[in-house]
Length: 130
Image 1 (cartoon, rainbow, N blue to C red):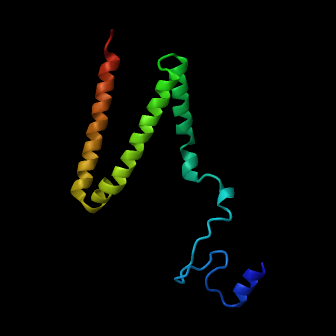
Image 2 (cartoon, rainbow, N blue to C red):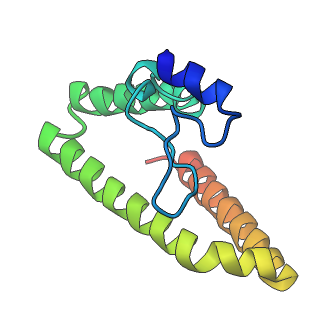
Image 3 (cartoon, rainbow, N blue to C red):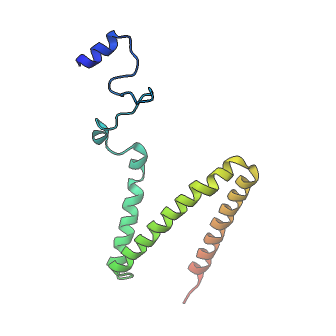
């Protein structure tokens, strides 16, 4: 408290709660309240999706469609591919899309064609009778 009062009386500058780096710029102090804030609102939005995925995994095992080891292996492989996709997207595709309208159009068309083809494939197999 006394540190803050002295800071205010001195006319300001870098906040004592922020600190000052050796170069003279403000540093962010991450050690005080971050543990108490909890998950971000964005993370809270994914909670229902995670719950649904966990339920589907449990359902696959309880219906004896997969073993627990198969579900765990699928989760590991899916997580690895998801991480790889994120890294490749962040480093290669996102920058190209932002800088080129042609790349943006191509990405939208490829995404749309992929989605439509998956839906057509799935509907074709749902209609089939054994």
